[in-house]
Length: 210
Image (spheres, rainbow, N blue to C red):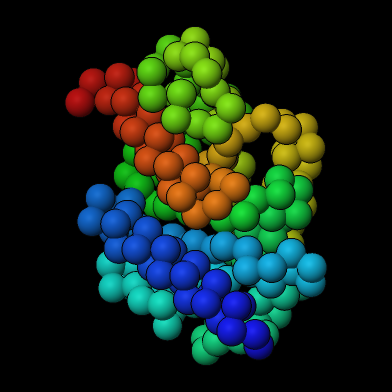
């Protein structure tokens, strides 16, 4: 591995580990929940992703593995996140350079409460302008909800169909599970998590009155 790649992996792992610790402090990835990834290189595809089973409040640069386009580990120690297939789908179909997944209370509650509507419509809030390409608070963001599954191949296929159907979304929810979003880099993906988690909490407090 070239020194340039080693430095890039170290930088990305540091950024993702910092996200994990920060999200843990906010109550968005308690325990071992959540998973984070970033593209190391595109051709051939190499994705850095959290290894399973690590407390996100104590995440370090050693808690990541590098996988290829099939999700097979090519570097690092441990088993990649069970949801690696979803990350790869987003990288391939959205051109995402980073994918982040949280398990907050509000995303979990709302994903169940709005499941039969197919998603959540969020509009009129100034914070929407924090999403890439959104220029006005009048924007309506549709946050689709997919039913959860332990069959990652089946779930990845449903995600792929959703991305084809909804090319302009910035994220989606898994029912009873949490939020996925992505970005052109780790910093943008982190911003999207912060924006969408804020909007979900506002939506939840408005709906449930607390």
